[in-house]
Image 1 (tube, rainbow, N blue to C red):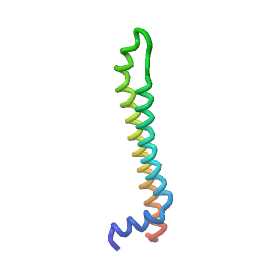
Image 2 (spheres, one colour; image 1 turned 90 degrees about the vertical axis):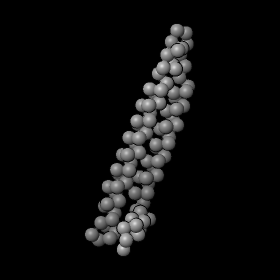
Image 3 (spheres, one colour; image 1 turned 135 degrees about the vertical axis):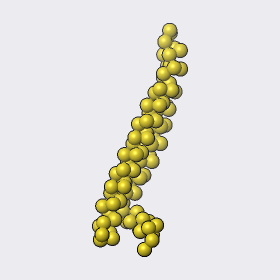
Image 4 (cartoon, rainbow, N blue to C red; image 1 turned 30 degrees about the vertical axis):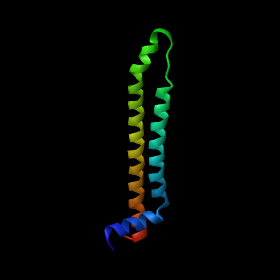
Length: 92
């Protein structure tokens, strides 16, 4: 059995691995969209109004780091669960 066949077979039967991958992608996109929305709706009045334009990229950068962290964490969970299911399905 080739590596690709083995990988796809275990991935097809491992619901936890599929969920971890799906959650990783969904949280990545969701956090990026939420961060962009929060940064764009940031408005100050009066003398602090120009400060919003300066702070906006830093807020988006923080949300981007959080999104990448969520993606890598969920992919780490997916790898760990995949290895457990591989042992269970293929009896290694």
